[in-house]
Image 1 (tube, one colour):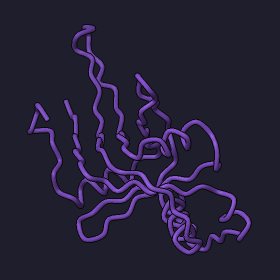
Image 2 (cartoon, rainbow, N blue to C red; image 1 turned 180 degrees about the horizontal axis):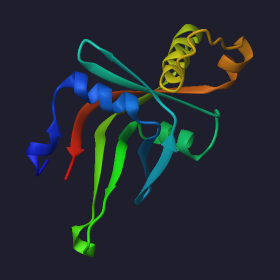
Image 3 (cartoon, rainbow, N blue to C red; image 1 turned 90 degrees about the vertical axis):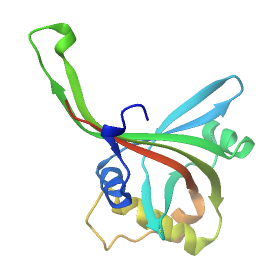
Length: 157
């Protein structure tokens, strides 16, 4: 990161930023160009390792690309605030963002899928009594991204 004064390195602070985000953009390789798809996500930190969870229909372009190449990049951002000015060059934006790369895999085990879906729902609701039908768990594709590299930036002008 060019501006180390804006870098967030504390894992607890990075997790705080991630938990305030509502969309994760996943970058996948599609032949010669990247394919970027916005997704709902859940995040878990255990013993200093961050894992992201996604859900999807069992078929489609992103699933095909994930099956072809398990490497992915991701980006999420939050705390957007426009900084206005009297001049065009004086305008700016405050924000916090998290970027990283990792390896994708599909979760096939029923109980693991159920746990991952619960983690995903905790990202968006405080309702902890949510249940999933067996048919729903069997029908959905659940994806795990083991984060290998991560960086976090707080841009405040």
